[in-house]
Length: 122
Image (cartoon, rainbow, N blue to C red; front, side, top):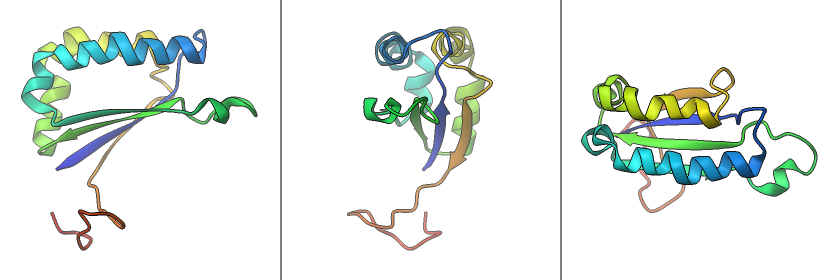
């Protein structure tokens, strides 16, 4: 199992509330209902930055997304799938600053928790 983590920066012209509302509702619905999602994604999690993090100014990022895939091949297939490219990708620019948003591919290694396993074990 691999995970794509996306550190998301909101568009500068949106308030935090507008960003979170669009991401939680419209974008989540697009991802949830998309055929490419059904084919490739095993889990999708949104992590919204807490309001208290904005009290001293702008937060480093406005949230993270986790997209879980069975393999790197499935990840690549999802991000090149015509259903994703047509429906989901254009919506990302409606709430996220895509120049500041960062995507990276990871493999989770539990250090503490029920599913603990030695590093490198897949």
